[in-house]
Image (cartoon, rainbow, N blue to C red):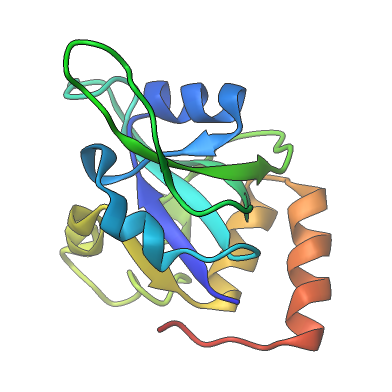
Length: 157
């Protein structure tokens, strides 16, 4: 089992939450193929709207990847992105990243902490995912991540 951070505007994350799916890197299939069923994913949203100046800088969703493999959808106007189904865990709030910067393994001690996010999808540690789940007040995710971790510990790939 692995743990991932995906990057998208909060507006796009909300569409995935409502539809039970995730989409990354402008709909590319290859990044989604790195995620396996049972892996945990949290979305980081730098902005509220895609391409907007409305800064958010928060974790906005957390959930587990499901079967099947990534699949392609037709959104019209020639856009055919790939998606992966996800069961999203309820969260009571978005979690601002600034209070977590010194605690997350991929930002601690980094002056240019946003660098990792430019890839659109990257692996993180079990401890990072637990911290994000707790910060979002997602009790379900905190409990499930803990249960999975006791049977299969993981370090980031």
